[in-house]
Length: 71
Ligand SMILES: [Zn+2]
Image 1: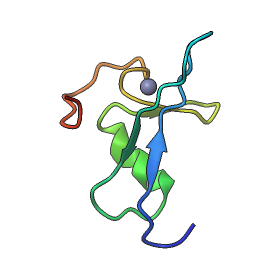
Image 2: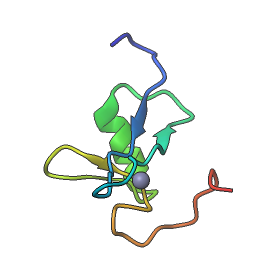
Image 3: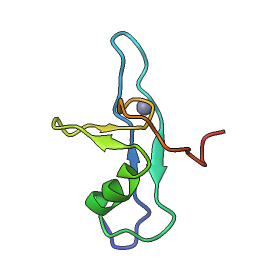
Image 4: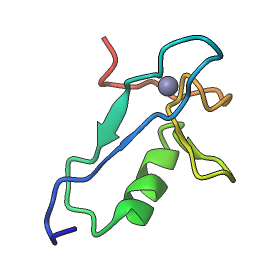
């Protein structure tokens, strides 16, 4: 991973028999690593499970603040 790369995390939610959620999210300003990115996205409802999966606000099971990137 090179410094200054644009990092994104992707929702790992996959319903049984369904298609994986393809939502992904980056951060508009520089973040050093995914840990920092996740910390920022947490405020927007993203969550990382104990199993190491990232979940978007729709699948994190948490009420979400308004998401400006969602149409
Ligand atoms: Zn999702």
